[in-house]
Amino acid sequence: MSVASEVLRLKEARGALLLAHNYQRPEVQDIADFVGDSLYLSRKAREADAPVIVFAGVRFMAETAKILNPTKTVLLPDLKAGCGLADSITADQLRSWKAAHPGAVVVSYINTSAEVKAESDYCCTSSNAVRVVQGIPSDVEILFLPDMFLGEWVRRRTGRSNMHLWAGDCPVHAKLRPEDLRKARAAHPGAMVIAHPECGCGSQALPEVDRILSTDGMIRYAEETRAAETLVATEVGILHRMRQINPNARFLPLSEGAICPYMKEIDLEDLRTSLAEDRYRIEVPAPIAAKALVGLERMIAS
Ligand code: 13P
Ligand code: SF4
Image 1: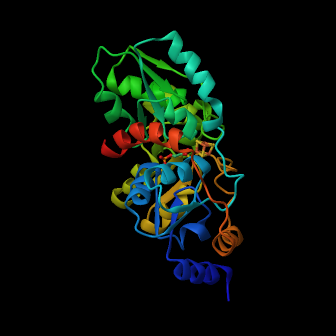
Image 2: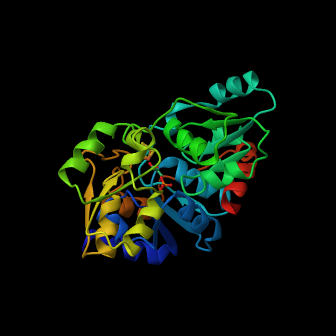
């Protein structure tokens, strides 16, 4: 029996739900119940009836699932699946930042630890960051964290000047520079360019980018586009589904090297072990979970 079939058999036996992020390995995406971006997967986790949720993604996503649906067993098959961006701010650092800006509200990107979420008023993802910020009265100061490129893009879209940005970035997206974009554009003059808002290139070379989109925004783009060729500025894992959805169009990575090592930690063997041996169970201490839930509920509602 193939490893994929074993995973499916174990999943069935345990009544488990397998959620996979758009950056996961193709063979993991292919056997998942749902594949999507952070917001979509959070909603799927929250409404799940299954006793077990296996998260093929990174740790902050599994923690979010546990906070949103605490009675379920949430498994992250490899604990090395972290996030360089989430590591760029600790709860202590956030407490100090808040102390320096009394009266400000905190908007945290979902790419943060549960402890940081517990210190936040709102959570958002790249899909709804603009909507979340627009929902906050315009005279209220905002601390936005941890991604400065996403924050800069939200600031431009909302025209908000009273928004302070934490100087964090994603080690994968920050490497995509405006020079890469210009080079790729020159090599593919007729191509459309779409970019994730975490990209270093997107916020600094905005006129060169046709659309700034979350990963699910990119999937919808793939469904609808009539462009023959599109350059995609984000983690390369997204290309698998885009090409499946629209095999007649060409989707090219802005950089072949845009690979998130954290998102590639989980493979089929890890999924098999996870389901067979119940590992690794993600737990969030109740007081942290209760506080983090406030911002997460606002994120789900936006
Ligand atoms: P999305 O919410 O767009 O899927 O992004 C998550 C992420 O980790 C991007 O690097
Ligand atoms: Fe984190 Fe960047 Fe990987 Fe997304 S791509 S999980 S932000 S390190």
